Image 1 (cartoon, rainbow, N blue to C red):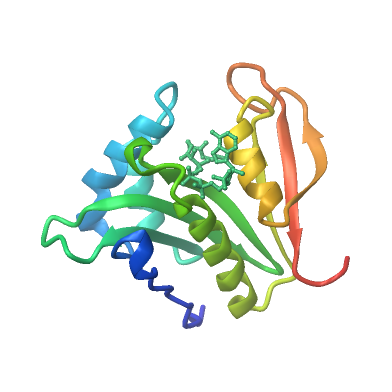
Image 2: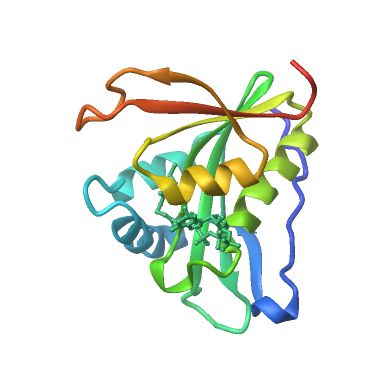
Length: 169
Ligand SMILES: CC(C)(COP(=O)(O)OP(=O)(O)OC[C@H]1O[C@@H](n2cnc3c(N)ncnc32)[C@H](O)[C@@H]1OP(=O)(O)O)[C@@H](O)C(=O)NCCC(=O)NCCS
Protein backbone atom coordinates (compact mmCIF):
# COMPACT_ATOMS: atom_id res chain seq x y z
CA UNK A 1 0.00 0.00 0.00
CA UNK A 2 1.31 3.47 -0.89
CA UNK A 3 2.18 5.53 2.16
CA UNK A 4 0.70 9.03 2.14
CA UNK A 5 2.84 11.86 3.44
CA UNK A 6 1.11 12.88 6.69
CA UNK A 7 1.25 16.29 8.33
CA UNK A 8 3.69 16.57 11.23
CA UNK A 9 2.72 19.44 13.40
CA UNK A 10 5.33 21.47 15.36
CA UNK A 11 4.10 22.94 18.66
CA UNK A 12 4.25 26.67 19.43
CA UNK A 13 6.85 27.93 21.89
CA UNK A 14 4.28 28.79 24.59
CA UNK A 15 3.46 25.10 24.99
CA UNK A 16 7.07 24.01 25.12
CA UNK A 17 9.07 22.29 22.46
CA UNK A 18 6.85 19.33 21.71
CA UNK A 19 6.92 17.97 18.22
CA UNK A 20 4.94 15.21 16.53
CA UNK A 21 7.06 12.40 15.14
CA UNK A 22 6.58 8.90 13.78
CA UNK A 23 7.46 6.43 16.54
CA UNK A 24 9.60 3.37 15.99
CA UNK A 25 10.79 0.30 17.81
CA UNK A 26 13.29 2.38 19.82
CA UNK A 27 10.30 4.19 21.39
CA UNK A 28 8.54 1.04 22.64
CA UNK A 29 9.97 1.19 26.21
CA UNK A 30 8.72 4.80 26.64
CA UNK A 31 5.37 3.87 25.09
CA UNK A 32 4.95 0.99 27.52
CA UNK A 33 5.69 3.30 30.46
CA UNK A 34 3.07 5.86 29.36
CA UNK A 35 0.59 3.11 28.54
CA UNK A 36 0.95 1.67 32.07
CA UNK A 37 0.27 5.07 33.59
CA UNK A 38 -2.67 5.73 31.25
CA UNK A 39 -4.36 2.32 31.55
CA UNK A 40 -3.20 0.79 34.85
CA UNK A 41 -5.90 -1.92 34.67
CA UNK A 42 -5.14 -3.39 31.24
CA UNK A 43 -2.15 -1.78 29.52
CA UNK A 44 -0.98 -2.91 26.10
CA UNK A 45 2.22 -4.95 26.37
CA UNK A 46 5.39 -4.08 24.44
CA UNK A 47 4.60 -6.81 21.94
CA UNK A 48 1.34 -5.07 20.93
CA UNK A 49 3.18 -1.82 20.14
CA UNK A 50 5.91 -3.72 18.30
CA UNK A 51 3.29 -5.44 16.14
CA UNK A 52 1.64 -2.11 15.31
CA UNK A 53 4.99 -0.67 14.19
CA UNK A 54 5.18 -3.48 11.66
CA UNK A 55 1.54 -3.21 10.60
CA UNK A 56 1.17 -1.52 7.19
CA UNK A 57 -2.25 0.02 8.02
CA UNK A 58 -1.08 1.37 11.37
CA UNK A 59 0.21 4.87 12.19
CA UNK A 60 1.91 5.44 15.53
CA UNK A 61 2.84 9.05 16.27
CA UNK A 62 4.14 10.68 19.42
CA UNK A 63 4.78 14.06 20.98
CA UNK A 64 8.46 14.30 21.87
CA UNK A 65 10.49 17.05 23.49
CA UNK A 66 12.92 18.24 20.83
CA UNK A 67 15.26 19.77 23.44
CA UNK A 68 15.82 16.36 25.00
CA UNK A 69 18.43 14.08 23.46
CA UNK A 70 18.25 10.30 23.26
CA UNK A 71 16.43 8.57 24.75
CA UNK A 72 13.52 10.67 23.51
CA UNK A 73 11.23 12.24 26.08
CA UNK A 74 7.73 11.16 25.08
CA UNK A 75 4.72 13.05 26.48
CA UNK A 76 1.94 11.33 24.55
CA UNK A 77 1.06 9.22 21.57
CA UNK A 78 -1.73 8.33 19.19
CA UNK A 79 -2.25 5.16 17.22
CA UNK A 80 -4.66 4.80 14.35
CA UNK A 81 -5.39 2.49 11.45
CA UNK A 82 -6.18 3.53 7.92
CA UNK A 83 -8.60 0.94 6.59
CA UNK A 84 -10.62 1.61 3.46
CA UNK A 85 -12.64 4.78 3.80
CA UNK A 86 -12.02 5.13 7.51
CA UNK A 87 -9.46 6.02 10.12
CA UNK A 88 -9.94 3.93 13.25
CA UNK A 89 -8.43 5.39 16.41
CA UNK A 90 -7.03 2.54 18.51
CA UNK A 91 -5.16 4.27 21.29
CA UNK A 92 -4.43 7.77 22.59
CA UNK A 93 -2.55 8.61 25.75
CA UNK A 94 -0.87 11.55 27.45
CA UNK A 95 1.49 10.96 30.35
CA UNK A 96 -0.26 12.12 33.56
CA UNK A 97 2.51 14.64 34.29
CA UNK A 98 1.80 16.46 31.00
CA UNK A 99 -2.01 16.46 31.06
CA UNK A 100 -4.36 19.46 30.85
CA UNK A 101 -1.87 21.41 28.73
CA UNK A 102 -3.62 20.87 25.42
CA UNK A 103 -1.52 17.91 24.27
CA UNK A 104 -4.50 15.55 24.00
CA UNK A 105 -6.20 18.11 21.78
CA UNK A 106 -3.04 18.34 19.67
CA UNK A 107 -3.12 14.57 19.15
CA UNK A 108 -6.82 14.54 18.23
CA UNK A 109 -6.46 17.47 15.83
CA UNK A 110 -3.41 15.77 14.33
CA UNK A 111 -5.32 12.55 13.67
CA UNK A 112 -8.06 14.57 11.98
CA UNK A 113 -5.42 16.28 9.81
CA UNK A 114 -3.92 12.90 8.96
CA UNK A 115 -7.36 11.49 8.10
CA UNK A 116 -7.95 14.39 5.72
CA UNK A 117 -4.54 13.78 4.12
CA UNK A 118 -5.44 10.12 3.71
CA UNK A 119 -8.68 11.09 1.99
CA UNK A 120 -11.07 9.16 4.23
CA UNK A 121 -14.59 10.25 5.08
CA UNK A 122 -14.54 9.65 8.84
CA UNK A 123 -12.66 8.76 12.00
CA UNK A 124 -14.19 6.26 14.43
CA UNK A 125 -13.26 5.11 17.91
CA UNK A 126 -14.56 3.34 21.01
CA UNK A 127 -14.48 4.91 24.44
CA UNK A 128 -15.68 3.84 27.87
CA UNK A 129 -18.69 5.71 29.28
CA UNK A 130 -16.69 6.18 32.49
CA UNK A 131 -13.81 7.90 30.65
CA UNK A 132 -15.06 11.46 31.01
CA UNK A 133 -11.71 13.03 30.09
CA UNK A 134 -11.49 11.21 26.76
CA UNK A 135 -15.17 11.64 25.92
CA UNK A 136 -14.94 15.38 26.53
CA UNK A 137 -11.74 15.62 24.54
CA UNK A 138 -13.30 13.81 21.56
CA UNK A 139 -16.55 15.81 21.75
CA UNK A 140 -14.53 19.02 21.62
CA UNK A 141 -12.72 17.55 18.62
CA UNK A 142 -15.98 17.19 16.72
CA UNK A 143 -16.70 13.52 17.47
CA UNK A 144 -20.30 12.49 18.08
CA UNK A 145 -21.77 9.33 19.59
CA UNK A 146 -23.20 7.05 16.90
CA UNK A 147 -23.87 3.89 18.89
CA UNK A 148 -23.05 1.59 21.78
CA UNK A 149 -21.50 -1.87 21.90
CA UNK A 150 -22.97 -3.79 24.81
CA UNK A 151 -20.43 -5.13 27.30
CA UNK A 152 -17.60 -4.28 24.91
CA UNK A 153 -14.85 -4.07 27.52
CA UNK A 154 -13.49 -6.94 29.63
CA UNK A 155 -15.02 -5.51 32.82
CA UNK A 156 -18.48 -5.56 31.21
CA UNK A 157 -18.56 -1.85 30.46
CA UNK A 158 -20.27 -0.79 27.24
CA UNK A 159 -18.27 0.82 24.44
CA UNK A 160 -19.45 4.14 23.10
CA UNK A 161 -18.77 4.39 19.36
CA UNK A 162 -17.87 7.92 18.35
CA UNK A 163 -17.44 9.28 14.84
CA UNK A 164 -15.90 12.42 13.40
CA UNK A 165 -17.23 13.00 9.91
CA UNK A 166 -14.98 14.74 7.40
CA UNK A 167 -17.77 14.84 4.83
CA UNK A 168 -21.48 14.70 5.47
CA UNK A 169 -22.72 11.09 5.81
C1 LIG B 1 -7.83 11.70 27.60
C2 LIG B 1 -6.42 12.30 27.61
C3 LIG B 1 -5.67 11.83 26.36
C4 LIG B 1 -6.54 13.84 27.60
O1 LIG B 1 -5.22 14.36 27.49
P1 LIG B 1 -4.88 15.87 27.92
O2 LIG B 1 -3.56 16.23 27.34
O3 LIG B 1 -5.03 16.03 29.39
O4 LIG B 1 -6.04 16.68 27.18
P2 LIG B 1 -6.07 18.25 26.88
O5 LIG B 1 -5.26 18.99 27.88
O6 LIG B 1 -5.76 18.48 25.45
O7 LIG B 1 -7.61 18.55 27.14
C5 LIG B 1 -8.46 19.02 26.09
C6 LIG B 1 -9.86 19.08 26.64
O8 LIG B 1 -10.35 17.77 26.97
C7 LIG B 1 -11.18 17.85 28.14
N1 LIG B 1 -10.55 17.13 29.25
C8 LIG B 1 -9.29 16.68 29.34
N2 LIG B 1 -9.11 16.05 30.52
C9 LIG B 1 -10.28 16.11 31.18
C10 LIG B 1 -10.73 15.63 32.44
N3 LIG B 1 -9.91 14.97 33.27
N4 LIG B 1 -12.03 15.85 32.79
C11 LIG B 1 -12.86 16.51 31.98
N5 LIG B 1 -12.49 17.01 30.75
C12 LIG B 1 -11.22 16.79 30.37
C13 LIG B 1 -11.28 19.32 28.49
O9 LIG B 1 -12.39 19.86 27.80
C14 LIG B 1 -9.97 19.85 27.94
O10 LIG B 1 -10.01 21.23 27.67
P3 LIG B 1 -9.64 22.27 28.87
O11 LIG B 1 -8.37 21.80 29.51
O12 LIG B 1 -9.49 23.57 28.14
O13 LIG B 1 -10.80 22.23 29.81
C15 LIG B 1 -5.66 11.91 28.91
O14 LIG B 1 -6.47 12.21 30.02
C16 LIG B 1 -5.27 10.45 28.96
O15 LIG B 1 -4.22 10.07 28.46
N6 LIG B 1 -6.10 9.61 29.60
C17 LIG B 1 -5.78 8.17 29.79
C18 LIG B 1 -5.79 7.44 28.48
C19 LIG B 1 -7.14 7.49 27.80
O16 LIG B 1 -8.18 7.44 28.45
N7 LIG B 1 -7.12 7.57 26.46
C20 LIG B 1 -8.32 7.58 25.66
C21 LIG B 1 -8.81 6.20 25.44
S1 LIG B 1 -10.31 6.19 24.44
